[in-house]
Amino acid sequence: MKLHRKLAKLARRETYRRGWRRAQRSVFRLPLGPVLAGLDQNRLAEIQKRYAGEKYADVDQWLRVNRERVQDLKLHRSPPQRVLDLGCGGGFFLFILKRFGHSVLGLDLDESSLFKELLEVFRVPRTVFRIQPFESLPNLHQQFDWITAFSIGFDRYRATNSRWGPGEWDFLLRDLQRRLAPGGKIYLTLNPLPNGDYLTSELRDFFSKRGADIERERIFFTNGVHKQLARSTSGDA
Ligand SMILES: C[S@@+](CC[C@H](N)C(=O)[O-])C[C@H]1O[C@@H](n2cnc3c(N)ncnc32)[C@H](O)[C@@H]1O
Image (tube, rainbow, N blue to C red; front, top):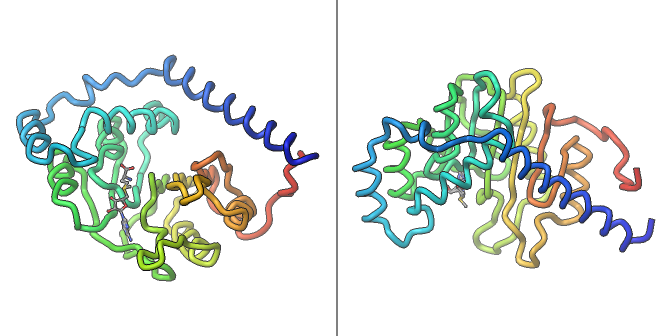
């Protein structure tokens, strides 16, 4: 298939999927009122005031963003799951999940006092840890049904602003796989590269061979990570 036809097909598929997600969200709603019930609103307002202007201080906005994440993964209508969120930030995603009876654990650096305070208000537990290339995560003393990571920031070499390649990702995915319960899922969303793409072709090929469903920044392993080539990646099928 010619390249421009392949790209057009891909764009149509993405538009369709986006539309489908939007439709599903409007059918299976997730009102924030009950989610926020019982939250210390005074403390939250005070934190927002003190950190005004910081990217993650607009709690309403980030709760809405994370509500969509929860809806798109159908976690507001699934039985209780054990969820580990890497680079959990202020814990918005896990806070919403906790309200639906899921058991949650965040993992992140301890570099942001805003995140620390938000996690406290949300009562979201966090393990402090720096994810580094070719280093295992700490012992988290449990298996998980889901491992997520949104707007990933740990895949960068700060000095050169370059990103992890297949070697680093292979190491992390093998590590994550060992922590997944049978049938567990891994869902990652990447930040854009300087050229606006989310993946190099090398990395796209790698994730695809490991069994990921890839859509723009979304990398979804719906049934764990495959060890080897699982399906053709010629793209014409
Ligand atoms: C762009 S923020 C996204 C936060 C959150 N996942 C969200 O989508 O709202 C990236 C997060 O990754 C964390 N992070 C960056 N490098 C990390 C590393 N090496 N190990 C663990 N966490 C890291 C940051 O502290 C921050 O919370």
